[in-house]
Image (cartoon, rainbow, N blue to C red; front, side, top):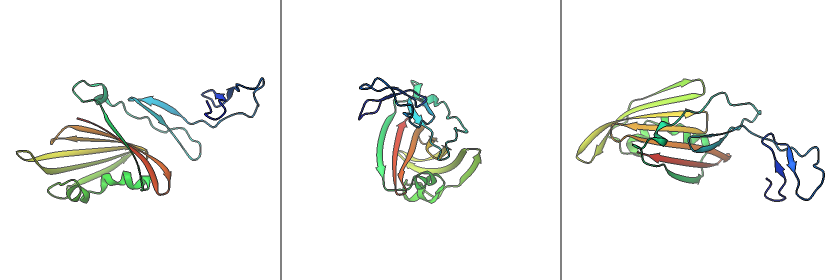
Length: 177
């Protein structure tokens, strides 16, 4: 429903009701995008050329598992290009200087269709000594990322990046342990 004039549209974009008119204008059609509700999220797929999604997002089993805490969701608008946000997963030097890893970790990256996988092994200071950890980052297309850490602490971070313009990105991070 349009928030200004309350015209109502079906999921196909065709106008179904104009509250103050008896006849619906035949050209009253809004553009639509593929939308899916999955893992407690509503996700929209946008392709500049109007294409359909070429991949599906995975089921995130941790979300409904009672052994994992409820998601802690955070939202920001940042002054960064969306691609800069995603490329962080292969910037292995930042693990030492930003996150406190004891050295720059070995990191591997591979591409499987629309899925980008980066894996890093590192050692961190922890209460009682040092601990080894593995971080696996899965990028599904440009806007959806899963980051799983094991070893030091089992955790999951779900990230989304939505470009606003060339220099601004809306991001969401959801965490669970």
